[in-house]
Image (cartoon, rainbow over all chains, first blue to last red; front, side):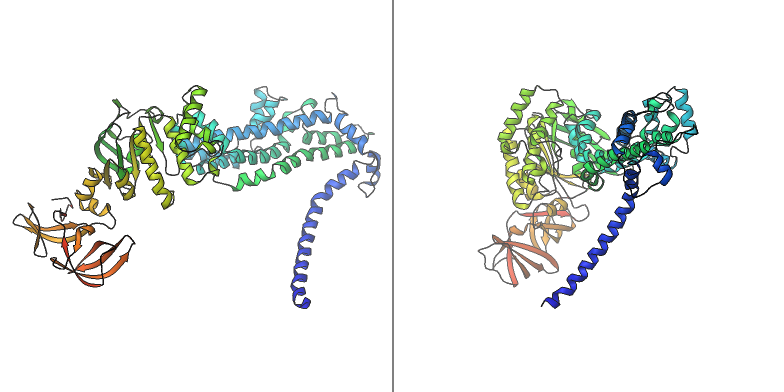
Length: 291
Length: 346
């Protein structure tokens, strides 16, 4: 009996082992750089210069954490980790919220109002996907500069928030909302603004959450634009500031590798937390089309 | 409370399709009118024009003594019940019912009172804090009714409200809606493609086909004196038997049997006889060859041939029937005669 049942079970187990092996290799590939970062931020900066990454974990972790969060270098001493963390959060949240608000309103206009050339307008918005920031960075900088928005939060955020992606996703979602809801609301005396706020926004909750995750991570990881637009150290974001720390111009100083490495770890944490906490919403928002 | 009157109202879509030919009728105060017809006949379009959800291309629409052609749906003093209920999925039943009143800036305690009253009337008291997704189809339909009732409108508009329910629930809701309408005495216009709903609920039926009104009348008039072959075959299940006849000397003949007099036309006509107006009778003038019997419990349908025309005979369950030859008589005065080309009643 056992001979009959064993072979299939063993084969199954082999398959499971293979699956897990592949998954574990994948996890290692993803996690190893992070582990290296942790290792390197646990040893003194001079040791990094001497030996580079190794398997030896030191005792400098809390020291470097202290330096990373509260220590500051640079000319003004304003680029402390806490400050950069706050700037990054402002950028990430402002970027995500701005994109969602603009995208929703644009999609609302395109889907629900009989505009002339609404479809054309949509496709024009859609083609801006072909013109990412990198392509239009000079004119964008010029405009922001002329408006005196360099080194301000709105200068950091506003030029980035027009979003074809968000508009597209919300358009698809709004089109799946049954027509009768609009009509019932019209008969119930809800005007366009009421309908948007009372019915469309609550219905879009999961979609908004999904968009928020994507856009927050996207905004958090912005590097080029903050590098262009922030020259004062008090405005640095984490992603941009880390680079600055390692760049030491004076000849005989050792770069603060430990501090930079720890900041890099800190920079990874908020996007990870957001994805972990909103994961179920995220999947729901992108897959659940109808209510 | 108000009457609704339509005057040469028509609808032409921008692509030139004429969804509704110029149409006029009046709905009296407190009357229950049913618009019935096959899909695509323009009945829903007409209802949506009365609601203000579709523009009126031409003609005038009065609700009460106001012309409302260009009045916003919210200001027409109407309430509408949709086929798929159109409840707001994220709001509780209570909020769903109250939403229309909130938008009209009515005091909170007044709203609470009206919602409670409507909930009482519709047996929704236990469900006020649920979401629509937690309700059954019949309950959702009641919420949609509640939303209409609290507004205290002068006209109720129903757009196939029972189509999404199963047959049993449909019968029950049919009775409930009709009873409620009678109690409230609100003018109502009800769209359906189900002729049973039309017959049972309506004070008057408006039969529509291809964007035109075929007939307006009480259920009995529409059933017994159909204005056209379309009405005759659309109303009633099974439909009226349509047989080839000849009119001459002021009378209509069916296979040489004179069956209707005072027919002015001459030549070929269509003779319509309801299946239940054919009575098995050993001395009857028509000889039918029965080839198929449908047993429906309370009654039976005999399908057969009369020479080369097909017809159906409706008999009660107590009548002995068998395949083969059967002689039937025609109930006196139960024959309709129609024009061959136009299908109009003669």
